[in-house]
Image (cartoon, rainbow, N blue to C red; front, side, top):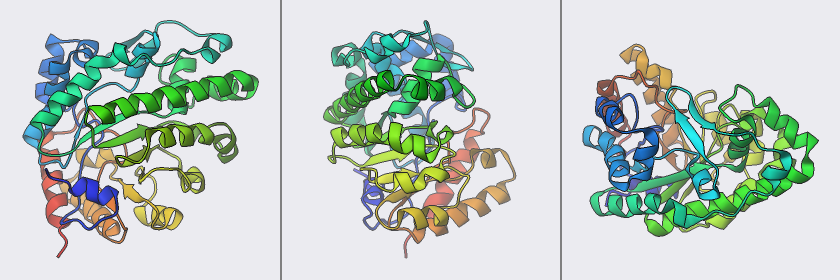
Length: 338
């Protein structure tokens, strides 16, 4: 088992910088687009054999240090009895709006309704020679979809709900923290060796709102997941929240491309490994600039107590696969410890 990514997450010495990529499987791969011609996104998520195929596709092309389970962020909603549609080019869209009272009475997660997820993990563990990453969203990110109904620019309805309905907000966030932790624990029991919490949209919050209305539930979620595998906490446009992240019970903090790793190091000291943080758009630009920026990130990472190379957010659909291969090989060669 290749375990350098697990060692980096635990801030142990590695032979070279490990790399995986957010949205590792997806529309930038021709073979994935062929899969989507035959099957809808929901069918791929609900059918273990199709989930396995989508998960393995990038590893057949690239020497990545981990696989990440192919799924959608909102899959746990199916285990809460909440239907949604996966709309091409738009993402998940809920089929109905919820009242504050309905949100406050969100049901416990029914794991049996998500057995397809665990079965895919068990199959993948038999086939993989490197770690498998599981994931889910953070409570705020889930709330934002439930309240907005679809992706939003700055989540104004969600921020208004936080202040207008404090009692319902607390009940909803607590239930989501419990449900999402249970979902991740089930993935760990099925065999994933690392988990990532995508709290992608907390950057829209002020430090005070995050500290008082979101952070307690992030802590609850991460603590309930436990320490049996490394936990990554990732968000975007959130450098103003770094001082709050610095006390989260996780092993790795994901950093987007807006701040250098050296800045993040100053905030997180040696308490966490860091993950990131190449701008995904550089994979569409000049190759010389791509490798120059990549080399800089690798060198910054070598000064950390633990570094996992990744993009600062998901890979863009128009990215050439050949460019990804050269990036992965460059990271491994340049990141070698001598």
